[in-house]
Image 1 (cartoon, rainbow, N blue to C red):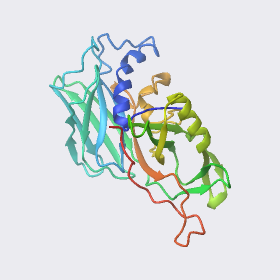
Image 2: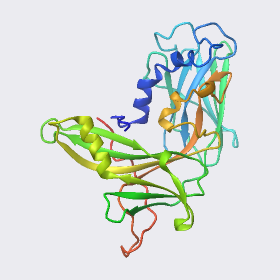
Image 3: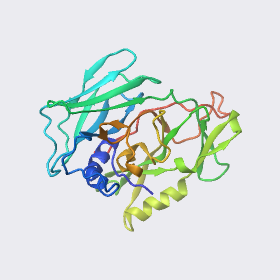
Image 4: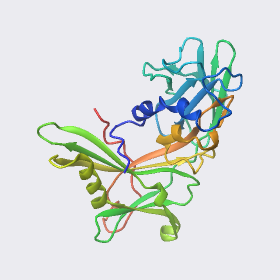
Length: 303
């Protein structure tokens, strides 16, 4: 079980991004991130989400020390739509970790569109990365398991690359006293199989009893649990998506073979399309037959 216990991919990634450059030094003896080099200038990690209203990327510099965040002075990060030529300067966020700056923009990101992110220092050193967003996610079905505790997920096989699939639980610990909000996530993208049902779908099963047992084991004896809501999170990946990446929240961990799609830099950036669905069976107007589920907003974030 993966227990992020956080309501935001962004917040979680900030906590783990600190170790990113340190980890790189162990993956390839020929590269030492703390040494002078004229090949790698910036590390860029993250994704562009065609369904989100705000985009975030994380930026690091290859320098002598990683004990403090890079100085944003002299660094310019831009996002460009390669079809229209529209370019915006991304905003430097006040949220930093020891070695990462975070940049954001509200520029509209479209499906099946190619974008370029460029990080440039005042001295001229530049890193850039190009990525393409996938098509909009097709119909999504949630059907009953036939008396078992849980549901069956069906995703149309027109999706070329499924980047993420999670069962997400929103719970309150010790309701009426502590009222602690918690979010528990259970990834099951690696359990997807292809079926001919519904005209051709990827399918996976969600077992509520098993997931609840894992939550109970995590919180320990004596803690009361109130389940507030359950959702399914799904993400499609663009052509740059690598099937060896376990989740869009784990892009910082994807270091196999020092894999990177950043020119003159390090890191990985991809285009995605995401959706959230209520974790209940979806029926048509008459309530007798399964129907495509309607997407919704994420239920809530950790306070």
